[in-house]
Image (tube, rainbow, N blue to C red; front, top):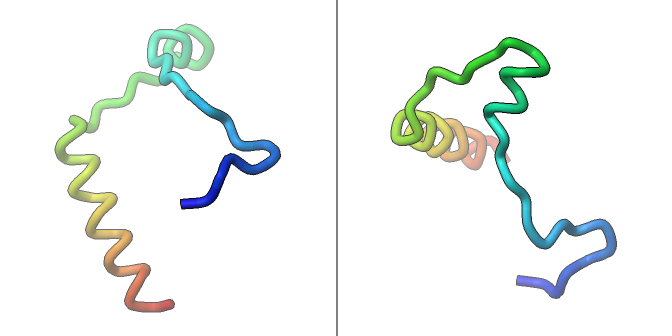
Length: 49
């Protein structure tokens, strides 16, 4: 881990209600499924690097 770098954001917040209000899009992937998919993608990507 490195110290905070210029441009790093100390905290972020998801706002799905704002996303829906602005675009009409509502995410439908449950968190657990999304994490599983991300981990699978990341492991696949790591093998290529």
